Length: 497
Image (tube, rainbow, N blue to C red; front, side, top):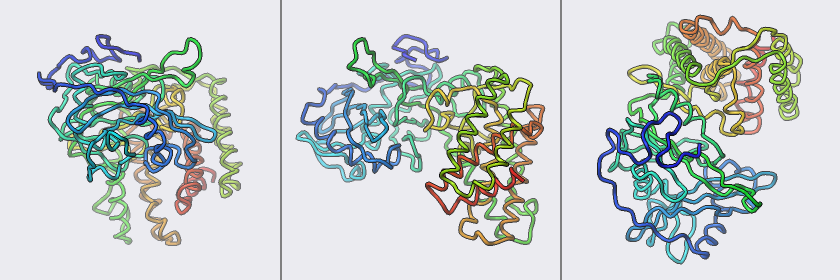
C-alpha cells in the first residue's frame, strides 16, 4: 500500500508520473505555496466543528464535534489570488474519532459560486472546499502526471487517460464520498473519511481492470497519502498510509439501475389491471441480464483475488455475529420482536450446514444503486463495501450469496418504496409483491446461467443472509425513515412464515 514513485502498485504497471497513452506531454507548471501559518490553521480549526456537520459526507452528523485538528498540510499550488492545500483533519466526537481529508482553496477575493462550501476567512483570504473549485481540482488532476506532491502520491496505469483541460463537475447525491466528473472522460472519487490501508474499491477495480473485465469502469489511477497516526506522539510511531482517491473511466450515457427499476414499478402501478409481465415497462429481462453479469464478476473476482472455504467453526462465529446483530436490533425495533424466533431459526439452519462454504472477495454493499445500464450491458460500481464498517470487515472473504441477498432485497425496496405514501392499498401491495418476486426469480435465473447453480438451491445460506440484511434495514429505517419500516417488515414476514 505504501507505494512511492517508481514502485509497482496493485497491478498497475506504469511508474507514477509516467505518461501513458492519452496522458499528453505537457504538465502545467507548479508553484508551491508555504504551509498554512498558525493564524490560518487556528481559523480553520475553529470553524470546522460548525462546518463539518453541515456536509453530507461527514459521518458524525448526529453528535457535536468537540475538536477538529489539522494533522497534515500539503501545499499543492499557488497562483494569483489562489492557493491550494491538501489537509488531513483529525475529528474528535463523544465516543468516537475519525480522520478526514479536506482539500482547500484559499482565495484572496470572495467567490460567489463557492459560497455554499465556504469554511472560514483568514487574514490571507477566504477558505473553501477545494473539490468544488474548478481551478483547484485541475491541480489535483494534474498530479497524476507528477507522481508526488507533499504527502500525496499519484499512481497511473499504462492505459490511463488523464483529461487535462477538462473542467470538473461535482456529482450530487453521494453519502460518504465526493466524486468529480472531468468532461466526458473520467471520474475521480475522493474518499472523505480516511482509513489506513488500500481501499477495497481500488484493489478490486485494479484486479478486474487487469483481467479486462467488461462489466466495470476501468481504473485509470489512484492517490494515496500518509498522515500522522492517532498515536503520533508515541515513541517510534509511524505515519498511517492509506487511499485518498481513485480515477476511473466515466460511463457517460449510463442509466442508474435504481431509477430504471422505479420507473418499471411506476408503469405497473399506472396499469393496475395488468400483471407485471403484461406492462410495457417490465424489468424482468434486465434483472436476468443483471444476474448473469453479477455471476460473471463474481467468477472473475474469485479467479483474481483470494478465495477460501469456511469450516463449521468459522461459520459458527459468523452465525454468532448475526445473532448479536439481531439481539441489538430488537432493542431498537420493537416491531421485530414477534419475529425473533423465526429469524433465529434462519440462523439455526445456517449453523447446521456441515459442508465447507466457499468464500471469496465480494462487492459487499450490492443493490440497484450500485449498477449502471449502458448500451453494452450492466456495469457494477463501488466495490468499497459498506463505508461505515471497519476496513477489516469490508475486505473479509464471504459467500457471494451475500451480494445476491443484497440485490434481492433491493428489488423489494424498488417495488415498495412508492407504497410508503399508500400503505393501505391492498391492490398495489399485491402488485408490488408480484413485481419483486418476478424480478427476484429473473435475477436468480440469470445468475444460475453463468454460475451453474441457482442461488435458491442454497436455501439456508441465502435465507440467513437475507434475514441479516432485513434486520439491518429495520434498524436503519427506524432511526432514519420510520415511514419506510414497512418495507423490511414485509420481508421479515416472508422469511419467517
